Each structure stands twice: as structure tokens, then as C-alpha cells.
Length: 243
Image (cartoon, rainbow, N blue to C red; front, side, top):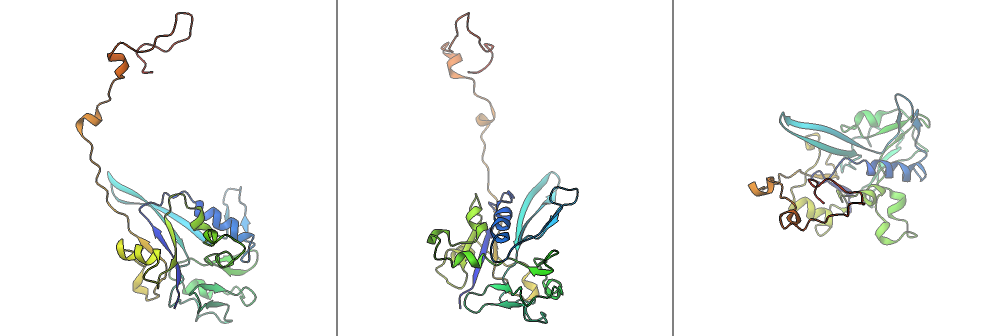
């Protein structure tokens, strides 16, 4: 069975929020929209987002690191949000494993949000409906788009290619190979929800710097006496300044 999902590389995510803004732009004008923004330019802006990036520090001073952690619906293979829905609005598609919300059936009771251990469902306060990541289902199957563009908006926007998209049940897919080769892991597997989305761990990279690289090399033209000299009537930099 196909299971579409995201694989996020924490080693190259820079926390730029391009995935957040592109997700909002696509979905607020698509089948899942509109997505409310409340007081966007005020003191306490808020709104509905399918994807958020959490940034925090790990380690102890002075050996600390900044981690950028994107999080959205994980499209669990055993989603706890589905059986608690009293109207059947939350459901998981058999053909591709995507977890969705039928807005026509949603009554905004928030049971699904309480059942989700990851906190990735958000009630749209204006529509009074529960919303979540759809993996841009209205985009990835759109035959009017070039095949290369039939990917979630967040994947298309990421400048560091930190987000991969594909079938995690296909052992030959890009996402499956990334998970296998680079130690991809699920978020909070102890909950037994079997998240489809995976994360690639941060990797330690050894930086080797020699002593001579720490010493600033002087301008070689100065040593040879060939530093360009302007004429007396032309504005010039101080002789001590490197050209």
C-alpha cells in the first residue's frame, strides 16, 4: 500500500520559514482555504498554519547548538485522530495514506486535536473547522502542473532541500533510501501511531583548521611593491588598506 510522506533533514534545515509561508500561501487559496490570520500586524499576531518551525537550543554553554524543527501532520499509519471523530470528518485515505479532514462534516469539537499527541491540528477560529497539513493533495495530483511541480508547496520552496517527498513504503523511493542510509527516525514512536513522516538526524561534521589558516595573509602585491598607486589628484585609500 502506498504511503506518501515527508522526510525532513534536520542537518540542513536553517529555520528560514520558507516552508511555512509557501504552505500558507498555497493552502489559503486552495481547497483547504481560506486560512485565517488574526491581528497579523498587531502585538499578538496569530492564525492558522499547517506547518510550523520550532527553534530551540540543545546542550550546555558554551557547547550549545541551535536546532530548527519543522513540524506538521505526520500522516500516521494508525492515526488516533480518526477514530475519535464523532462525525467521521477525520479520515485516512487508502490509496495514498494521507490523513484529511472533510470540512463539510467537521463540527469543530476539537476531539481530534486532543487525541493527536503531536499537536499539529489547528482549529480555524473564523471557520470553526479543524485544519491540518494535506500534503498539498490538490497539487500533487494536478495534471495541469508539470510533473516536477507535483510536490507539496513546502518541498518546492525549501532552499536547502531539507524536505523530501515520496512513498515511504516503496523501498526504491528517494525517501525510503534516505531513511535507510541516514538513520531516519519517527517522532515519538512510543505512542504507537506509526508516523509516516520521518526525520533525518543532525550529523556532527569535523572542522579541520590549520595554524596558517588562522593567520591573515597579507596582500601579495604589497610584498612585491606592486600595489596599485593612484595619481596624486585622484582619491585614494590609505596605503595600509588592502586593495
